[in-house]
Amino acid sequence: MKVTFRELGPREFRGAIRELVAVYAAAMNPPDRTLSGRESIMDGHAASPGFRGLTALVDGRLAGFSYGFHGQSGQWWHDMVAAALAARSTAGFGDGVAPLTWLDNSFEIAELHVMPSCQGRGIGRSLLLSLTADRPERTAVLSTADAPTRARRLYRGVGFTDLLTDFRFSGGEPPYAVMGAILPLSPAATVPQSPRPSNW
Ligand SMILES: CC(C)(COP(=O)(O)OP(=O)(O)OC[C@H]1O[C@@H](n2cnc3c(N)ncnc32)[C@H](O)[C@@H]1OP(=O)(O)O)[C@@H](O)C(=O)NCCC(=O)NCCS
Image (cartoon, rainbow, N blue to C red; front, side, top):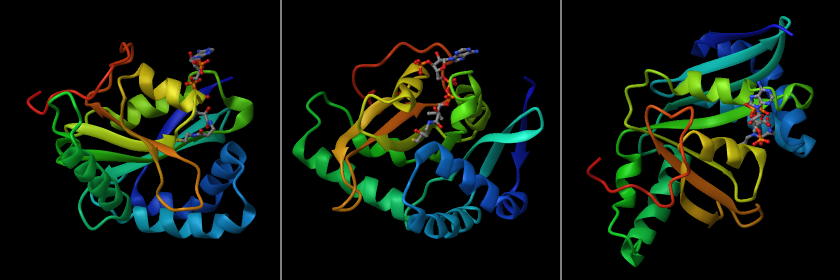
């Protein structure tokens, strides 16, 4: 099995969206009716500042992808999370941290998926580490199902910590965890127990 990685600029990414959404569908098994909406969300994300996309190929065939961009206010995810962190901040995080600073200069990881037949071989981890390498931002942030999944283990293993748990982006969805890490990620991070202070 030969694994290669390839960076996609916004234009190439847009041209590959159908194929990328097929990987997303195989990995996440979402309802079919949501897939065209996913395509247009990804198309919009390609225009975001600081966009970076990365694909993994196994023996020349698309096996996984990840992408992200610079987070800023006015973006849907950013504003939802900022509001929730602000509310949490008002309520008090309890350990003297400043939750809002996580979004001040952040790289938002929007998607990371690997075809089921290729999972568990280090491809997702390599995508995540390469995607975030040499980024100018101070932190990386993402959301994932608030459950003991392989994705959650992977994120914790490279330094992500929970910023929000049991978080709902909309009423009908399952709970999410919003996670953050200080860049660069650590390939062999130990699991932090709480968000770091704002003066790192
Ligand atoms: C989450 C996901 C992206 C991780 O990608 P992956 O390629 O399966 O993950 P990796 O192989 O890099 O690491 C996962 C596991 O493989 C192990 N591993 C890493 N390198 C390995 C190697 N060379 N050989 C064998 N196992 C390896 C890791 O220790 C890890 O073990 P664990 O999950 O049992 O703790 C992928 O499983 C996926 O697409 N899942 C469904 C969609 C999803 O949840 N996406 C994330 C949404 S936020």
